[in-house]
Amino acid sequence: AQSVAQPEDQVNVAEGNPLTVKCTYSVSGNPYLFWYVQYPNRGLQFLLKYITGDNLVKGSYGFEAEFNKSQTSFHLKKPSALVSDSALYFCAVGPKAAGNKLTFGGGTRVLVKP
Amino acid sequence: EPEVTQTPSHQVTQMGQEVILRCVPISNHLYFYWYRQILGQKVEFLVSFYNNEISEKSEIFDDQFSVERPDGSNFTLKIRSTKLEDSAMYFCASSEWGVGSGNTIYFGEGSWLTVV
Image 1 (tube, rainbow over the protein chains, first blue to last red):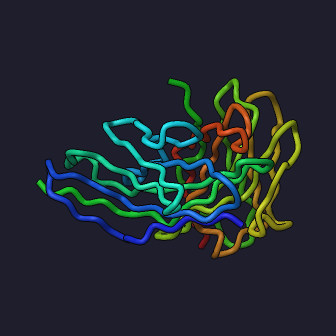
Image 2 (cartoon, rainbow over the protein chains, first blue to last red):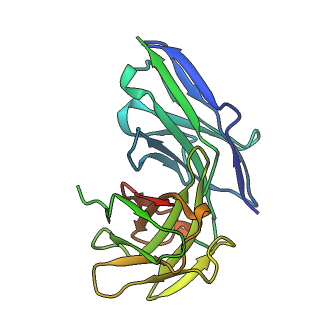
Image 3 (cartoon, helix red, strand yellow):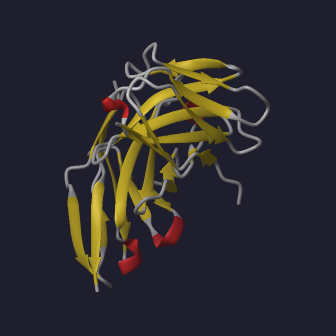
């Protein structure tokens, strides 16, 4: 069975500071990994994904994530956070074989203070 | 940019009533999904649909739930007899091919269902 853990319910960061949202996963073999963002009263917006290749993945709005196989992690990062980055962030893992289910982590609320 | 659209955005229904949530997936996508998010909780997979049949479903997706693609554009989720615990945000999603091929799933804005 596949699972995702986001150990922090909330992350607070000052505007302009680096932002990191943590994610670890458990899945058989190599995974497909995704990050989504949810703004208040909105749907889930795709940020980026890791499929294969370079461990550092760049996505929308200046976000990037690093796949670390040995630590089974896929942390989301942004070098300089904006107030508008305040939202709920979800990490998800997908199957590398048959199956079409994305399994989501519990979400991390990011609050960027001016 | 193509997007998944959902209607209604918010529906209030009485317990025991039938509800149909509607979705228009992205036009060239072949896989369709329903997920739900109970307030304050994680996003949960309900069902995936491909080639006019369910390809995978979760334990949440019991006999009270059904999905249908009644025409070439719409994808619906029906809850036959709603319960209080069905109150949640329901997200429709679609992908060009399956997630197992590394494809991205794109989500709609959600339909907020309140059962009273």
